[in-house]
Image 1 (cartoon, rainbow, N blue to C red):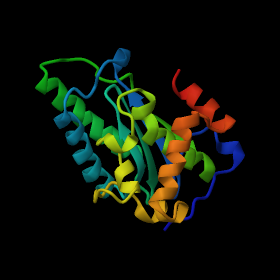
Image 2 (image 1 turned 60 degrees about the vertical axis):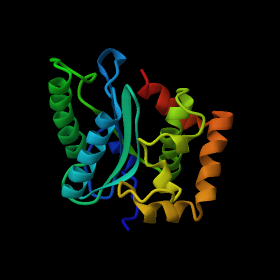
Image 3 (image 1 turned 90 degrees about the vertical axis):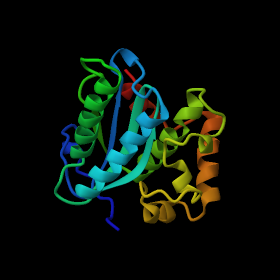
Image 4 (image 1 turned 60 degrees about the horizontal axis):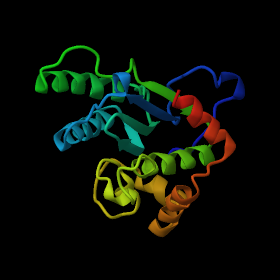
Length: 204
């Protein structure tokens, strides 16, 4: 398993695609409109993520597809930029979506956004924020009830391939540990100040 190596402070404002680095990649629908209308929409994207992440040697750490936005935490393992995955996936999806619903124009709010994640605590808090998104937005009561994230893979309750199980086990020795970590956040809605500031900037 690759060891996480934070980049020097001086380079934090520059997005560099680099082997061993973790990235938070996200976007939302233009004018915050719905981008996933039915289950087949979500499944199309999940299938493409599997295809392109494998082809580009990118590990999917955490993801969640929501009705009008998405989040991915990815690790770039080789020379191919992690940004190749969302670019390829959502270009393909936009074309399929417009054809399916007889629409034209931009589906997303511009190009996807991507941020380096520089510390392991920050990364883990983002994982629970991402997995807790459907509960936070009032879609369900338990993140395990949302099929369009890899939360169930983190808990070992689904045999999907879009997860780095070694990463999970290295940080949460048992599924109970991670479930408690996520539910603690959902109960308190509290995150470290640096993570809260990051999320506030992201949601603007």
